[in-house]
Length: 528
Image (cartoon, rainbow, N blue to C red; front, side, top):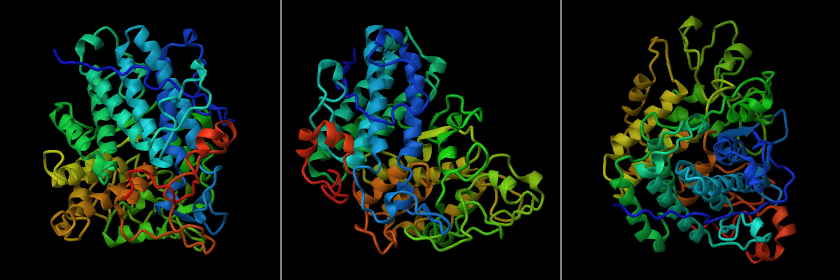
């Protein structure tokens, strides 16, 4: 019988005294009162919170990564104009991650006590997911003493970032072992309470393996971690369930609706439109660098990431200071109603008959669209990188091309001309057949890893700016990424967040032991 190591209560938590509290779909019970809450219902709420963290808490990193530019009609949104980050910037990401971690810890503890092992494994997977994001933004963070307020620990020590990553790998190993043990899982399944995979343990295994692969590749430049990377990649390769594949994105949808602003899909309501169809992301517009890059690759996704302006064109501004009063906003079918209600949209679509257009397309397809935790295309790009590095078997080219095709399919790229072909795979095949470096695989022979990372960068526009930022910090792609053009900028490019003020107020001894923190030092442990 396969030996199963189950890591229970590795990180029972830290209740932070924060003002932003539970501003997502709330868990209607206090995790410190476990007798009053069903852990399956807590899972629904926790996954919904996780989805909002991914969609909203790192939104300003889209500026750092040149997915949006600065509007000439409003102040530059967020702290990315000068890169002089402070303890107030991105504090919500710290608070929100630790708050949702409390709920996952509650789920794990309560589910273990009632033999609901599916929930135990799901909670362990999500704890690794969130602690990974905390390390990727703050480096050292509370882990071994975190989430232990009930044990009287109100000021947890900070663990070394690499140690936290190692513990996350163990959590994921434990979760996969549980998910793949039918004896443990036969007695219970959360079904619809699981608002991500509907109780499908195979998809949870694929998600857990993808999270692990992401963490392992983040550490690719850390010499001391090479043995761990090799051994854990071998486990992924040997697992018949594998990672998230074609069309297998980790999507959360608890029933998003237009009943209220709080019920709308988080990406749509954060960078798209309000419930009254007004622009939600004031001060941000399409980015001129990103548009230029897509144009240089003959990339038809321009009009799916961004909308056409009133003149029927897609134009943008740089990040830092505004300059283009006709810059476009972010893309989706809402543009048909807001800008081109006369049915004469000319760029990048030449359909004169609007009835030929699909009903859903672009970055912002609907206020009820599902939220992405990890997309199929991100997983496939990660796998392509791992194969290219010799860490996994397979074809890097096939994974690379499938990743591009999946992103075209999600955006529903239906034409870049007037041919009338409404088929994303048709257009992705034309795109990757080009003899252009960083597009066509053969044309990218001099630097296939650069092609993988460049196309991954393009595909993550607004859907995962944190992973895009991580790739740039660890590998430096895209190599021509411009920095903010604001002459008042303090640092060319930020490497990390500053610990939030609540830590300096309530956990001063431990946070001050981390030394002086700036946006550029200390670097995240996996950075070269």
